[in-house]
Amino acid sequence: MEYIIIIISAIFVNNIVLSQFLGICPFLGVSGKFSTAVGMSGAVIFVMTLATIVTWMIQQYILIPFEIEYMRTIFFILIIASLVQIVELVLKKVSPSLYQALGIFLPLITTNCAILGVAILVVQKDYDLLESIVFAISNAAGFSLALIIFSGLREHLDLVNVPKGMKGVPIALIVAGILSLAFMGFIGMV
Amino acid sequence: MNQWNNFSKGFFRENAVFVLLLGLCPTLAVTTSAINGLGMGLATTFVLVMSNMIVSLAKGSIPAKVRIPSFIVIIATFVTIVDLVMAAYVQDLHKQLGLFIPLIVVNCLVLGRAEAFASKNSFLSSLIDGLGMGLGFAMALTILGGVREILGSGKIFNISISYFPEGIDGMLVFVLPPGAFIALGFLIAILNRILKKTT
Image (spheres, each protein chain N blue to C red):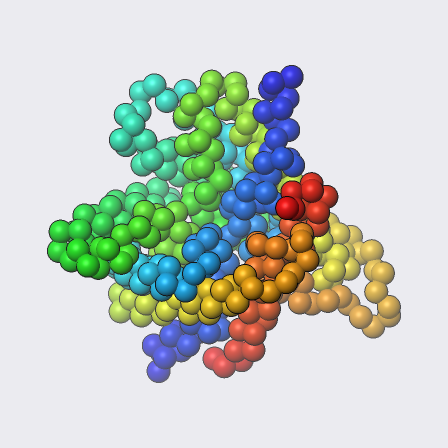
């Protein structure tokens, strides 16, 4: 039951993009086309889960025993950056087809604040390992859901006649606002 | 004159939020009021100025291949300093900004300036560039926070300027997450219009 609450709350109620504002850069940056949005979503699900597991272990077995919790930001960001590099190398070797699909999105992920954000949120919420994994996967799913819906909307926006000054990013932001308003309807589900 | 240009470009011509669209996560998340926006903007300015200074001093001794991780460590150090100082002296603001203080480290604006400007320019130019970009970012956050606060709760810097008819407290949606997207969208559209960047 606990896990179901974590899943529903992360995907719908506290959607990571539309209500927590994490990962706005890729949300606006790669949502132009449906296919790139799907690729980015895959990469985020993969890296976010992996990064959360590793940072959770670092927090439990290094930062807390040595009482250096104030080093958390430096530790986490370095680990995420190197993890992304390693994932890129391993994927290239092990599964070239997957690398082909996710490759170009991997370097972008280091500066995706959703990854670091979820790693820190897990620590703040004091989750155990299994809860952390569930939390990371469902947040990544929430990110994918928002990104894929939004990319579908933006493909239609290109064809719409909007006022000159509104073209491009401004209208995209307003549409994102309306999408966020729609997601607010889920409040009260949990 | 050149340095003045260097300083002033961060406010309008190359404003981080309105023109370059960098650092949008904190921009949207913390601007529920003008004071929060200002606090976040100043915290980012400090990190930006310090990291620009250190990066420009160290540019000769960092090998090109490991420059990005090195920049990240430099930035993360100052973010940790800001985090600890704010937790000690401005607890309320620190609680309000919460997660977004450690997340300054992944603000593309800070890393972007280190990579694009400070690693190529002199100490003084980097300092001025950091100050200009940072204060421009703070200005954008304060404006967005102010707009949302006025529309959402009829206050500015927590001072009531009640212009709503009796019985109405404000348009709550502007304090909630959707309002952030909508307000920023309109602000960028208005600025596009003023700066005649539209084609």
